Length: 89
Image (tube, rainbow, N blue to C red; front, side):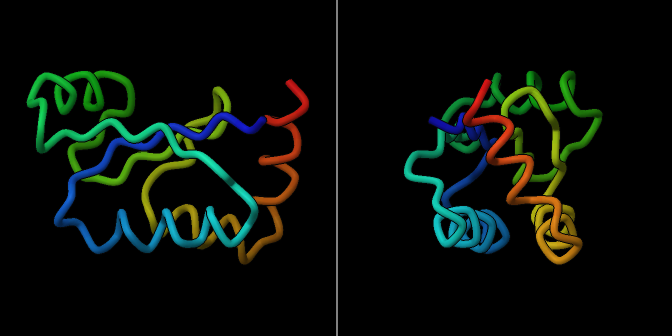
């Protein structure tokens, strides 16, 4: 099973858009880390990524970035192979 972890908040439209794309590409479960419910998670996210905004998306061990990064990766044809590699790991 593909491991997708995403730092999110409930009111973020970019988080919803990223989740929808991942689900369209066959991701059945996303491990959501809600920074709006646990402020300590935002600090962890910043330490891991150097970024302050959500979503921050990890596929397997790869930090994809935010929603725009995910969309660009998909348009380049890189999302499907990354999801497949993560599923095989």
